Image (cartoon, rainbow, N blue to C red; front, side, top):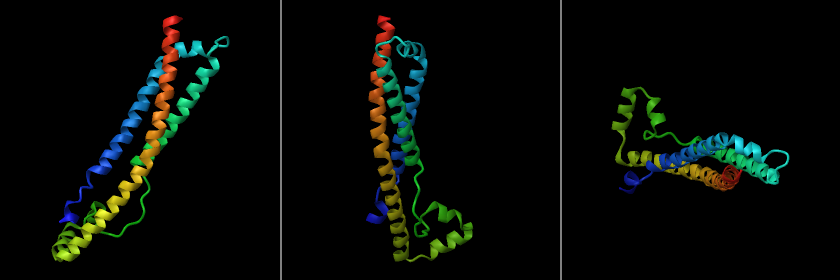
Length: 163
């Protein structure tokens, strides 16, 4: 029963959703930076006492956000190792003509069907572990870029309010 009820299906979708959320938030952050071009430009002018700090924040935020984006894409489409063929994999099912697939599945004994499910569960678990390994640095670099973005936005708001 455990092999047939192991809850694996929702994990890859959840992991990919988190990576997509990072991509969305980074897009929002850069949109806000672009919309704040005038105050940022004034802070970067030659006489500004905050010039170096704002430039450093902008560069560091951009670099960490770029690395978060790279990790997000690596999370969504990681490189997978070769796995044993299984009649439970959609790719292996699609490679067979419909009649051949039906013939093979109906010819399976209970033990053979269990082996197909176990092969599938193991491969999907390996995929989930790889996706999690890519998501961790994605979230770390996103948090760093978010902190730097917030600091930059504080300087922009201060410049806009105080002139």
